[in-house]
Length: 202
Image (tube, rainbow, N blue to C red; front, side):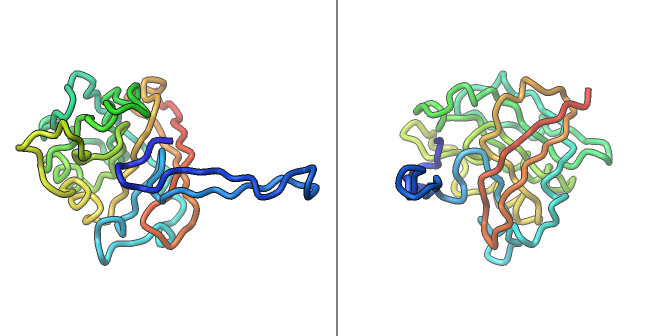
Protein backbone atom coordinates (compact mmCIF):
# COMPACT_ATOMS: atom_id res chain seq x y z
CA UNK A 1 0.00 0.00 0.00
CA UNK A 2 1.32 3.41 -0.95
CA UNK A 3 2.28 5.60 2.04
CA UNK A 4 3.88 9.01 2.51
CA UNK A 5 7.59 8.85 3.41
CA UNK A 6 7.92 8.25 7.15
CA UNK A 7 4.28 7.27 7.68
CA UNK A 8 3.44 3.92 9.32
CA UNK A 9 3.57 0.87 7.11
CA UNK A 10 0.39 -1.11 6.54
CA UNK A 11 0.00 -4.51 8.16
CA UNK A 12 -2.86 -6.98 8.35
CA UNK A 13 -2.50 -9.70 11.00
CA UNK A 14 -4.78 -12.62 11.67
CA UNK A 15 -6.13 -12.64 15.23
CA UNK A 16 -8.76 -15.38 14.79
CA UNK A 17 -9.45 -18.07 12.20
CA UNK A 18 -12.38 -20.34 11.45
CA UNK A 19 -10.33 -23.34 12.59
CA UNK A 20 -9.15 -21.80 15.89
CA UNK A 21 -12.11 -19.69 16.95
CA UNK A 22 -15.04 -20.43 14.65
CA UNK A 23 -14.79 -17.02 12.98
CA UNK A 24 -12.28 -14.91 11.11
CA UNK A 25 -10.92 -11.56 12.35
CA UNK A 26 -7.86 -9.49 11.44
CA UNK A 27 -5.93 -6.62 12.98
CA UNK A 28 -5.33 -3.72 10.59
CA UNK A 29 -2.55 -1.22 11.34
CA UNK A 30 -2.07 1.86 9.20
CA UNK A 31 -1.75 5.62 9.33
CA UNK A 32 -4.75 7.86 8.78
CA UNK A 33 -3.26 9.03 5.46
CA UNK A 34 -2.69 5.62 3.91
CA UNK A 35 -3.56 4.80 0.32
CA UNK A 36 -6.53 6.64 -1.17
CA UNK A 37 -7.69 8.93 1.62
CA UNK A 38 -9.22 12.25 2.60
CA UNK A 39 -7.46 15.02 4.54
CA UNK A 40 -9.51 16.96 7.09
CA UNK A 41 -8.46 20.53 7.93
CA UNK A 42 -7.11 19.26 11.27
CA UNK A 43 -4.33 17.54 9.30
CA UNK A 44 -2.33 20.78 8.94
CA UNK A 45 -4.40 23.40 10.80
CA UNK A 46 -4.20 23.44 14.61
CA UNK A 47 -7.78 24.69 14.89
CA UNK A 48 -9.09 22.85 11.82
CA UNK A 49 -12.18 20.67 11.72
CA UNK A 50 -11.86 16.92 12.18
CA UNK A 51 -13.62 14.37 9.97
CA UNK A 52 -16.47 13.78 12.39
CA UNK A 53 -17.41 17.47 12.19
CA UNK A 54 -18.37 17.10 8.52
CA UNK A 55 -21.77 15.88 7.40
CA UNK A 56 -21.59 12.72 5.30
CA UNK A 57 -22.72 14.75 2.27
CA UNK A 58 -19.35 16.56 2.36
CA UNK A 59 -17.78 13.37 0.99
CA UNK A 60 -20.02 13.41 -2.10
CA UNK A 61 -18.55 15.91 -4.57
CA UNK A 62 -19.49 17.06 -8.04
CA UNK A 63 -16.09 17.34 -9.68
CA UNK A 64 -14.45 18.80 -12.72
CA UNK A 65 -11.43 16.86 -13.90
CA UNK A 66 -8.46 18.99 -14.95
CA UNK A 67 -6.12 17.28 -17.42
CA UNK A 68 -2.49 17.84 -16.37
CA UNK A 69 -0.99 14.72 -17.94
CA UNK A 70 1.42 16.81 -20.00
CA UNK A 71 3.33 17.90 -16.90
CA UNK A 72 6.67 16.34 -16.05
CA UNK A 73 8.03 14.95 -12.80
CA UNK A 74 8.02 17.49 -9.96
CA UNK A 75 6.58 20.18 -12.23
CA UNK A 76 4.19 22.66 -10.57
CA UNK A 77 0.61 22.91 -11.79
CA UNK A 78 0.31 26.63 -12.62
CA UNK A 79 -2.52 28.93 -11.67
CA UNK A 80 -3.75 29.13 -15.28
CA UNK A 81 -4.70 25.44 -15.10
CA UNK A 82 -7.30 26.22 -12.41
CA UNK A 83 -10.59 26.87 -14.21
CA UNK A 84 -13.40 29.09 -13.02
CA UNK A 85 -16.18 26.59 -12.46
CA UNK A 86 -19.96 26.57 -12.48
CA UNK A 87 -21.78 26.95 -9.18
CA UNK A 88 -22.71 23.26 -9.04
CA UNK A 89 -19.07 22.10 -9.08
CA UNK A 90 -17.48 21.91 -5.63
CA UNK A 91 -14.26 19.98 -6.27
CA UNK A 92 -11.42 20.14 -8.79
CA UNK A 93 -9.62 16.88 -9.48
CA UNK A 94 -6.19 17.23 -11.06
CA UNK A 95 -5.47 14.32 -13.41
CA UNK A 96 -1.72 13.89 -13.81
CA UNK A 97 -1.69 10.21 -14.76
CA UNK A 98 0.88 9.69 -12.01
CA UNK A 99 -1.08 6.76 -10.57
CA UNK A 100 0.63 4.61 -13.20
CA UNK A 101 3.75 4.89 -11.00
CA UNK A 102 1.89 3.62 -7.90
CA UNK A 103 4.16 1.87 -5.39
CA UNK A 104 7.39 2.83 -7.18
CA UNK A 105 10.08 5.36 -6.28
CA UNK A 106 8.91 7.51 -9.19
CA UNK A 107 5.53 7.96 -7.51
CA UNK A 108 7.21 10.39 -5.08
CA UNK A 109 8.19 12.71 -7.95
CA UNK A 110 4.69 13.71 -9.02
CA UNK A 111 3.57 17.11 -10.31
CA UNK A 112 2.14 19.30 -7.56
CA UNK A 113 -0.10 22.32 -7.12
CA UNK A 114 1.73 25.62 -7.15
CA UNK A 115 0.85 27.75 -4.11
CA UNK A 116 -0.96 30.21 -6.41
CA UNK A 117 -3.04 27.40 -7.97
CA UNK A 118 -3.98 26.07 -4.53
CA UNK A 119 -4.99 29.54 -3.39
CA UNK A 120 -7.17 29.96 -6.50
CA UNK A 121 -8.96 26.69 -5.64
CA UNK A 122 -9.52 27.90 -2.07
CA UNK A 123 -10.81 31.29 -3.25
CA UNK A 124 -13.51 29.46 -5.21
CA UNK A 125 -14.41 27.30 -2.20
CA UNK A 126 -13.35 24.13 -4.00
CA UNK A 127 -12.17 20.89 -2.46
CA UNK A 128 -9.25 19.32 -4.31
CA UNK A 129 -8.53 15.81 -5.50
CA UNK A 130 -5.23 14.51 -6.88
CA UNK A 131 -4.04 11.21 -8.35
CA UNK A 132 -0.75 11.74 -6.53
CA UNK A 133 0.63 11.25 -3.05
CA UNK A 134 0.29 14.90 -2.18
CA UNK A 135 -0.87 18.25 -3.63
CA UNK A 136 2.45 19.65 -2.35
CA UNK A 137 5.90 18.35 -3.38
CA UNK A 138 6.71 15.05 -1.67
CA UNK A 139 10.21 14.75 -0.18
CA UNK A 140 12.58 12.94 -2.50
CA UNK A 141 16.30 12.90 -3.24
CA UNK A 142 15.33 14.29 -6.65
CA UNK A 143 13.66 17.43 -5.25
CA UNK A 144 14.67 20.73 -6.83
CA UNK A 145 15.99 23.64 -4.74
CA UNK A 146 13.27 26.02 -5.91
CA UNK A 147 10.34 23.84 -4.79
CA UNK A 148 8.01 25.28 -2.14
CA UNK A 149 8.90 24.49 1.46
CA UNK A 150 6.40 22.90 3.80
CA UNK A 151 2.77 22.42 2.82
CA UNK A 152 1.48 25.61 1.17
CA UNK A 153 -1.19 23.83 -0.90
CA UNK A 154 -2.45 22.01 2.17
CA UNK A 155 -2.56 25.24 4.17
CA UNK A 156 -4.41 27.12 1.41
CA UNK A 157 -7.09 24.45 0.99
CA UNK A 158 -7.40 22.94 4.46
CA UNK A 159 -6.94 26.38 6.01
CA UNK A 160 -10.11 27.42 4.18
CA UNK A 161 -12.05 24.57 5.80
CA UNK A 162 -12.04 22.46 2.63
CA UNK A 163 -11.14 18.81 2.02
CA UNK A 164 -8.34 17.18 0.00
CA UNK A 165 -8.68 13.72 -1.59
CA UNK A 166 -5.30 12.10 -2.29
CA UNK A 167 -4.04 9.03 -4.15
CA UNK A 168 -7.06 8.80 -6.45
CA UNK A 169 -6.64 6.30 -9.27
CA UNK A 170 -8.06 5.47 -12.70
CA UNK A 171 -9.33 8.98 -13.48
CA UNK A 172 -9.38 8.11 -17.16
CA UNK A 173 -12.48 6.00 -16.51
CA UNK A 174 -14.63 9.09 -15.88
CA UNK A 175 -15.39 12.17 -17.94
CA UNK A 176 -14.57 15.81 -17.36
CA UNK A 177 -17.54 16.06 -14.98
CA UNK A 178 -18.16 13.29 -12.48
CA UNK A 179 -19.42 12.66 -8.99
CA UNK A 180 -16.85 11.54 -6.44
CA UNK A 181 -18.09 9.45 -3.53
CA UNK A 182 -15.33 8.98 -0.96
CA UNK A 183 -16.61 8.11 2.49
CA UNK A 184 -14.19 7.85 5.44
CA UNK A 185 -14.81 6.31 8.83
CA UNK A 186 -16.43 8.87 11.13
CA UNK A 187 -13.30 9.55 13.18
CA UNK A 188 -12.35 12.45 15.43
CA UNK A 189 -9.26 12.68 13.31
CA UNK A 190 -7.11 14.39 10.72
CA UNK A 191 -7.87 12.00 7.87
CA UNK A 192 -8.85 8.47 6.95
CA UNK A 193 -8.63 6.00 4.08
CA UNK A 194 -11.65 6.00 1.76
CA UNK A 195 -13.21 3.77 -0.88
CA UNK A 196 -13.36 6.30 -3.72
CA UNK A 197 -15.90 5.78 -6.49
CA UNK A 198 -16.33 8.04 -9.52
CA UNK A 199 -19.77 8.22 -11.14
CA UNK A 200 -19.61 9.61 -14.65
CA UNK A 201 -21.78 12.64 -15.47
CA UNK A 202 -21.01 12.86 -19.23
